[in-house]
Length: 126
Length: 194
Image (tube, rainbow over all chains, first blue to last red; front, top):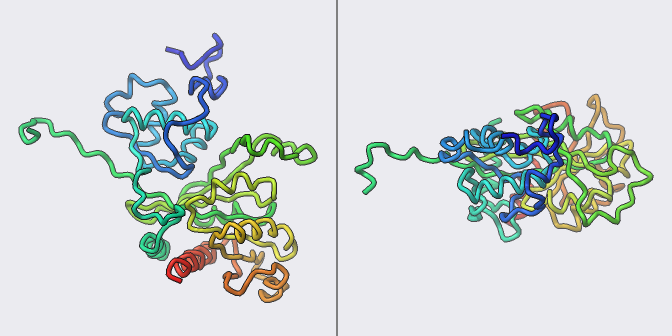
């Protein structure tokens, strides 16, 4: 299937207008920050062969924990497109994210004391 | 009755928590070098498209390369199995503030990188982080380890209060940039316990 390619004879799917990949949608159903990390699920591994090329690429990258901004840079897709695609894939159970883990964030979304202490300890050992 | 399954479902991989620090400063002050000195990956660049909020921004007289997109460098530091720190190097000009609003949301804080011979380049960044109430440190990039002005003079010129940490750093040197980040995290920590 070459459904991501709109012009016959042009095999390079990056030539497609980027938002074609999202069906023209520019908003994700899920709020995803650029640093939000996603990881491929077991379901993603099982259904890999059935996925469209760009989704397969994202699942491949996310075998290791990968952030939205890294996916964008690695696959050379605009951040907005990655957000929509990843949002869909989270909803469909292909990717996991910890976006609901707000336990360690202060009310303004910044790291709280406990998390800052862990960051400090982590940084000291690099 | 899960225990009777012959093929137990493998557990899903855990998702680490992302945290971030913004490295801001004027053009060619050494932001990319700073990020590269600490990043475990080759720093990557992403092009953030201008959002609708910035449509009114006049970029006509500026460099063509930034007419429609803004390049943003970033690096990554794994701080443990479940904790990853991202560093974002971002242009310090006023017209990129729309980008900072998102970038700074949830951030530990910011490093404002300063070239002592072009102090005015960092004014927009200092103004922004001050008014947004974001923890930040001012890091004077000492190229070749030399600084022609005292930190006190620079502090006075920037009009930042004594409570804002100010350090000399060398963007090329990992130990130096690491201690700048430690300074920032300690500062952020002090503010939460204050």
